[in-house]
Amino acid sequence: MKYLYAILISFFLNTTVFSQVNVAVSNFSNESEVLYLDAWERSVPTLLRSHLSDNKDIVVLDRARLDKVLEEQALTLSGLVDSSKVQTIGKILGAEFILSGKIDKQGSDIIVSADLVRVKTGQVQTEIVRSSNRDHKESMIEMLANNLKYRLTGQGEYQTKKVFKSNSIWYWTGATVLLGSATLATNSYHNDSVDKYNSATKLKDFDKYYDRSNNSKDLYTILGILAGSAAIGTLVDFLSSDEENEIRSGHSKQSSVKSNIYFVGKNEIQIGFQIHF
Image (cartoon, rainbow, N blue to C red; front, side):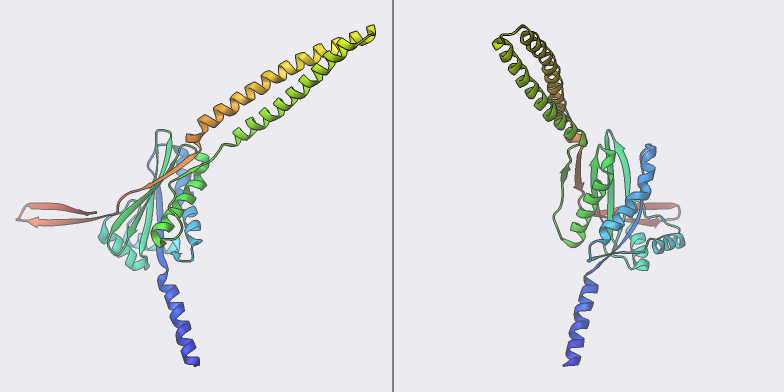
């Protein structure tokens, strides 16, 4: 019976190990001329490794090990799609997938694209996230990692869009509520002063409530203008902030690229490419 338990435990442990996906995360290069995106070259791979490592079914291979193999092979994996090179590196690393990518800026959008290369077949699938707000970097990479996890393990849901409301809209909304409340309170105070002025029977009360009603009228007029301005600011911010605070994703179809060089005759060389979708 003990032997049976040992066999069962060994079976389940081995099943767990072999069900895991080994992924090597390489460099992401800044393809734009935007200087601050140079910092993204360092942070994006680090964030991706962290998010991917959260999944128990994904094993992220050590970066130092990857760098050592690349140095020995005199290669870079940024944008690498040559299946023979991928298979060579993957075999040395023991990786099933190799991930590299690019960072670019098109118009107002910052675009992070990740090329997921399947070592066994050389197939490449590209996942993309884009946003016009640079402050959403971590949320962009979180969405990118989520979609990569979905591709690698089938777990969770593929995310196509995230919308964030800017902090400023809450400031505008708060200002509208506070100023609107102050306007209503001041108007009520003004009406009360007018009523007391109309019912006054003494000269000193006439003067007192006359000044009070005039002052409160001026105050609630100013507060009303400010409350209206705040309401307009809230509406404008609400309508204009959607695109700036939106993250969108997308992906390409799987493809594989193979290159061949043929020597024909004495002085002829033919170069051919096969692309499979």
